[in-house]
Amino acid sequence: MNSGAYDSDNIFAKILRGEIPAQKVYEDNSTLVIMDVMPQAEGHVLVIPKAASRNILDADPGTLGPLIAVVQKIAIAAQEAFDADGVTIMQFNEAPAGQSVFHLHFHVIPRREGVPLRPHSGKMEDGSVLAANAAKIRQALAG
Image (tube, rainbow, N blue to C red):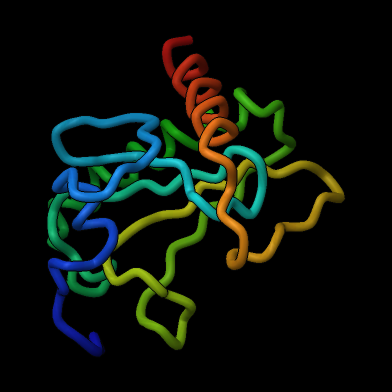
């Protein structure tokens, strides 16, 4: 059961409208990929549909196909860009499940064997580091 309505003033909606800056990695007609400003590992990105959806529970099924295709594309590129051993993909639905921004999004996090995830709170990453990491993923996408 969905516990709330979509709030068009959430931070991702503001980023999509260009009201708040973000380090963009990839964009197409239906999806935006940005660097997570509080990354849990090097190369942590967020894949966001442009369509207004609170989370997967209320998303239009037509949004999900293109979105998951981009998640896969970005996961492959991020794994290559950061020479990662694997990729963690996470998606949360409603606050009790860990969702803190109520706009559908997937976390794509390159992972290395034996390296734990950092907490997803606290200090924001330096913008120059985010820009360099975004460039690495864009380069892998260009392949």
